[in-house]
Image (cartoon, rainbow, N blue to C red; front, top):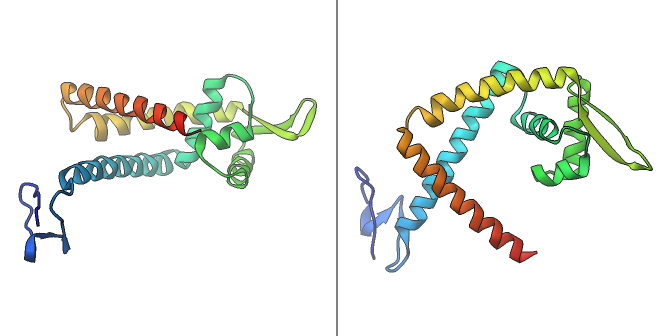
Length: 175
């Protein structure tokens, strides 16, 4: 058995980490590094979502819809939004229903195709997005940029951009 430990980490009986034996040749360090990346991203996303809910009264998914609608500058189809946010059509419908009830968006049938629904920002939606962007920027300054030096942050962002590019290329090849 072979194991790789982190500083301060103690292995259990028979070279096991967290009670799991690691077979020779398993790229344990690589698995651990990837887990660290995913864990950090998940925790940062939870912090960002918590702050949006606490300070703006909106969920992270609502923030994402507001961002996409503002970026588009024109009404967007619910199907297109659902695809981008990786939501089912039913999940998107429920989310937009709540946003309509809150006055953040308006929904109407697409011209020439009443089955297709278009969504656009209202004035209240624009105002909520401006508020949420301020809160989100403060949160990111504190929890993303704050713990890192400027150089560390630039190296991390460059590395993540490379990973995103290669992952998109791979996923594009699968379709």
